[in-house]
Image (cartoon, rainbow, N blue to C red; front, side, top):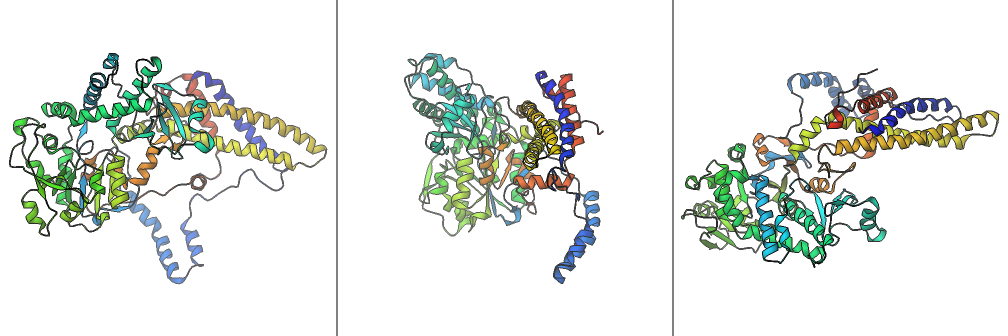
Length: 617
């Protein structure tokens, strides 16, 4: 905590004494207390037995059995079942899913089966700069730009019209905005995105989601060229929207012309992250009885290179067609989302009789007129296809309903949203950022608890202030009331002052916690205290989400994924009261003293290290 808040932190300690004194005025208010007290922490099995008498006999017998077995089952669970500890291999659930209900599991390749180092994005960045300057006429100084891979994160929104990059919460409120690399002030941000009847929904054509890792290249180049245009309008005589269009075209051409893929093929270990668990996962799923398929937008030649690397065949002379056996069927150059939407998309079989010599060559294709009824004989002629559509896939798999398929990918739009909305497939989103997010959360648990305590205190303080105001309105004329009114006015003035102090302390502490995750944008799943727009999309469109696809190798066919309970604000308050009773002012006072001591010492938390918890008094 910054030292300038030390005096404020110390002053807040006195807040609790002030709040306690308010109870002296309860007699002035007409029979009301400052807060209803909840004394029970958990419903005991005796309470259950008492309530059974009000139920029909059959239900009463069942509940009686549950109540009598409650203590026994609790002891068994704690003795034999280890308590779960969050880790980067966790698979999180938004919609309940039984693995036994699935017949097939499919995968995207790029950024799903194959994860890339930042050097891969750098290839696109450098190639796009070349095209912007030598093909589209941008100034030579663009070639000197340096790729800042860490400034932007996934889940942001690009405003092509105004040249801004935004972070939006789930309510479509813009929480943070940058013009180029300069942050907009609160008034500027609200003037642009909070103007009454014209508030944007952020689904308009002027907005672009940074929803994949490779679109971070677009965001960096866009911010750099926005600053160039602002500093020298004559150097770039195009609108922000035209600039973005040029960037998107340049980056896309880098992926299409084969230059990037040729460099990856020459030295795949420099660009692709090794994950031995990936191949093991694919074999495990087939052994569990699932049909496994691949649907990727990459060409067959590049897919051949990547899949061989994942199998440990990095050198050109080591590459074989053995990777094909990992899947029941594979679709390359699938052109998603068209593959998922257009039942008329044509199907071609790839001729695998010729070895792949280069990612730039084109392997011969044979047109296929649909999928016949004799699927095994059809696949015996070759199980790797070019293009195709979802109808071809589901007939090959023998799957009648979309909810019998789980598709795993990294792209919110073409991998997750379309498969779920259009086809009813179950979906699993790969979110590589989860590894760092979980690790940071575990390291900053004390800091997180500090913020939570301060927010709870702020909530209670607001309520106490309101109670004092109500007490003032309930006063009746009289000699005693005049003295009480003067005391209440003094207390109210003091409480209002403490509110401002507490707000500043909370802001400093919350910022410190927030920036443990990213120095600019904070947590990927949060925008302020709300879920971010990205988090809302993950919740709405992915049945499961995890940090990497190989985590599915830890799952058996018998596994069932279950959601956590949805929590509304009143659920949160009731949960707190139900587990801890009335507000524990003493504990909160200890927490504030601890925060003040940490600020005075300027120790670990200032440097981003979690502090040790305070001792109970």
